[in-house]
Image (cartoon, rainbow, N blue to C red; front, side):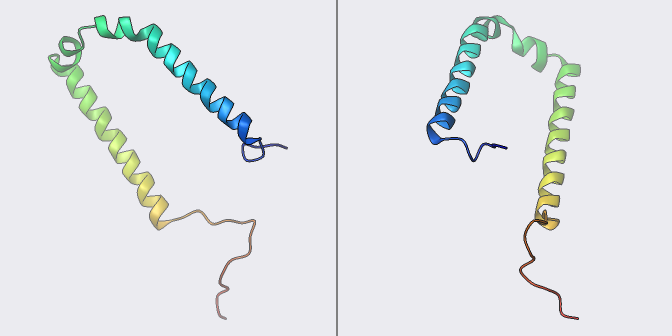
Length: 89
């Protein structure tokens, strides 16, 4: 079974370029709609929407911090290789 590490390098670069091109086309298509919206009036001046945005940012920071905490203090142990150290009896 092939995975992304077994693909030829030229094919990886072509796929990356295709993804970047798709993002560029997407931004080109939606930019007039994004620019025409009154974002400040909708989200900054509206106290309820602004509060929801603040809560969502706080949730994101909390989840990111929890993920970093568990990555640092409880790292993933590989099961396909032998452990580097064996505990003494």
